[in-house]
Image 1 (spheres, one colour):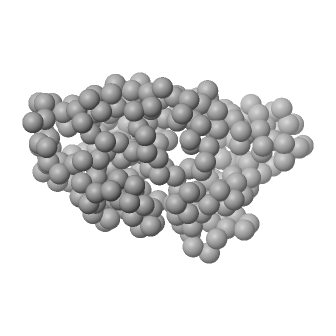
Image 2 (tube, helix red, strand yellow):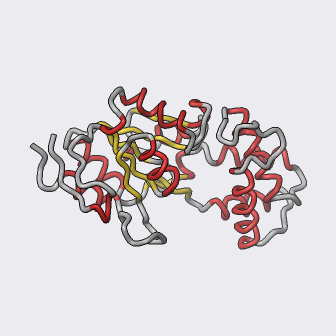
Length: 250
């Protein structure tokens, strides 16, 4: 397989000639919540008596999420990156409680939000995702999704037609470790059944989807849709597909 050489300034390596598998992050890379997380929390919270304004809900969510990533919630495992379905449920229950602390029925409010994000209708594929996935599949690449999520990711992906060409999913709650734990990337290698250097990971989180996979021996590219980085990342999956399959592979 021969793929298009990429400049060092974009990829960190000169070419992806060994690439057999493309592994995508999910949220922020292939899919995005619609309505936004802040809007969903605000609207559902209102039904349970919350009086917080939308902007405040957003601020409270980001603060709670950051703390949860450091395992600063009750019952968190000692290992910062250890997880499972029960841990994820406890983490998100705590986040909802922190964000919507004035809800009159916190348990039911949590359950509605938990269910909301399990529905495919609560998510959109990015406009460039479907075409890029189709082109890469036609070019012979095998693909997987690797995400810090829980079992809800499966019904979400099953309900989004653009993702049907991706048959393999590595979900942190099932692996029992979240990115950037080395165990997570070892599970990707196991699922793909190839050598680490034959895997190209693409995602919007520079630490989780670029630095950590490179440490694990993967090739990796940063998808910087909002151009918040140093200007060396990709701005779209269309650009990514163009790089890999134009000119045609031989």
